[in-house]
Length: 190
Image 1 (cartoon, rainbow, N blue to C red):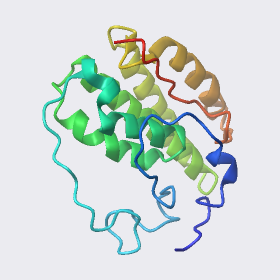
Image 2: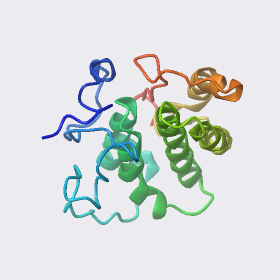
Image 3: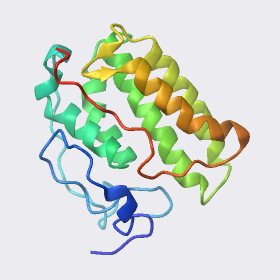
């Protein structure tokens, strides 16, 4: 196994954060232009893995939905591209413009913005993409009803996220570390 830059060597990103699923993490956090593409490259961490077909799902049963919970774990451990992959199937079978659809699309965009922030260390123009994705993702999440949805206190998370990304509007790059925004779920919200 290669020790890719910005991957397993990032011990700061591997701090013990509560896990919601038992699935194993990939052996690197994909960053375009730095690592082998996870599914397209033979060296990719998910090369040859078959995507499981996602069928209709119930957001009221979020606390047992392993794809959703694994996506949360991936996001919280800075596997932003991989979180998108975990949530994509759920998002595509959600009713368009439903709370589920906007919620997952918002999370995907917010994770993509954080990935662009990581990429901006290599190419500063990625901050433009980060700004667009952050704005769009925050807008989508702010429209979700109720405001405590699928275990997440959305207003609280949006405040944390907005505080973290405000530097990108000043052409500064926030540091993705243990202070990065985390998706904390409350299992008492059913």
